[in-house]
Length: 458
Image 1 (tube, rainbow, N blue to C red):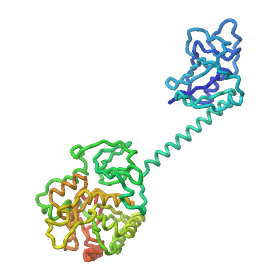
Image 2 (image 1 turned 90 degrees about the horizontal axis):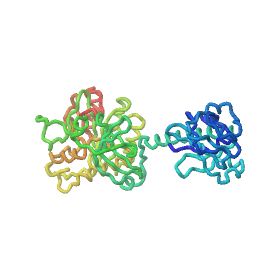
Image 3 (image 1 turned 180 degrees about the vertical axis):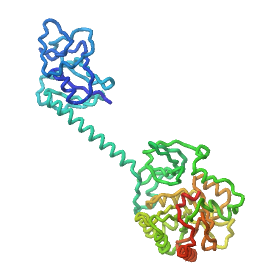
Image 4 (image 1 turned 90 degrees about the vertical axis):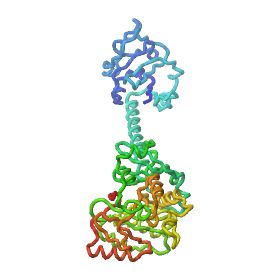
C-alpha cells in the first residue's frame, strides 16, 4: 500500500485525535530530531523537551498525552521556520514527523489548506492539507467510505468479468464472430476449481477457452483471463476419468473400428438417447423431442449435430435451444463433422471420413465454431459420419481430445436397446422409422430407464 502523507498536523496539536478519529490503528508517533513546529508553537508531545526558551506545553486535546514518540537523539527545537509533515508508514503502522521547507505554505488561504490537494508523485496515496480537527476527521471518514465503495465496485467488476459466458446468436457468420480458434491441452486452475482446456479462441473480441471437467466430462466456455493455465499432456492426466474415456482399454470382443467406431455401450442401467442431425433439407422432427420432454423435466439427450445442418436449420436450432432454456430438455451437443462427407454406393472403406482429401481438422473445428457462434457449448464427444472410421482416424480424433462415440442400438437397423444401451435415431427427417420404433418402445415400457446423460456413459 502506498504511504499516506498528512501536512502540518502538529500545527493544531491534534495528531493523536486525528489518528483515533480516522481509526487507522497507529501505534505511536516518531519525531525526527530535525523536525520543527510551526513558528512560535512547540510540538507539544511529552518526553520531547526543547531548549529553555521553548514555550510552555499547550495541550489542545486531552489525548495528546497518549502519543509516545520513539527516542530521538536531540531535543526538538521550536521556532524553526519550516513546515512539519507527519507521514504514515504502513509497514510498521507509525507516523513520522519530519521537516520540509514551507514554500509559502502558510501564506495560502484556510480554504485552500482544507482542500484535497493532489496525488503525490512518489506513489503516495493522498496529500491532504488539514487545518481543522473536526473537518480532518470527517475527511478521513469520507475517504474510508470512498475506499470501501471503490473496493466493492472493483470486486463486483471482477465477479462480472468472470461470470459464466453467455453468447447471444447474431446475424454475423461464425467465422466473423469466432476467431483464432486453436486446439490446446492445458491444465487450468481458479481458486479451488480445476479444468482441462482443449480449445482457445476469441469470441466477439473476448478471449475464451473451452474447458472439460476432468471428472464429470462437462464442458464449459470460460473467460481465459479468469484462469491460470499451463500446458499438460495425456500422460500427466492419465488418471482422470476424462483421459480414461478418451483412451479406453482394448476390448477384443467389440467389432472392428471400421464398423462402429468409438464407445458403443454405456455403463450402468437405463439408456443413453442420442440423435444425429446430418445435413438434411427436411424439417426437424419436433414430435420426437416433444415425446422426450414428456418423460419429465430436463430429459437428457445427446445431439450429434453437423455444421451443414445448423447452417440450413437456424430456426430449428433456436427451437431446440428454447427447449433447453425452458427446462424441458437437457441437450449435449456432440460434433458430427461439418459437411458429413458421403457418396452413395461407395464402399465404407472409401467413404465418409475415409474419402481421400477430407480435412479432418476443418470438419471438427468449423462445426465447433458454429455451435459456439449459435450460443451453445460443444461437448467432449464426436460421432463419425456413418459411424465409420479406422484406427488412424480414431487416434486423430483423440489427439483433438474428443471422445469417439458409436452406438449399439441403432433403432432403424433393428438393434433393440438393453440396459446401458447407446440408442441412435435420426430426428433430421431422414429416418422416420427409427423415431416410430422409439415411440413404441417408450409407450410399451420397453425402453431401459432411466434416460441418462451421455457424460455418464464412459
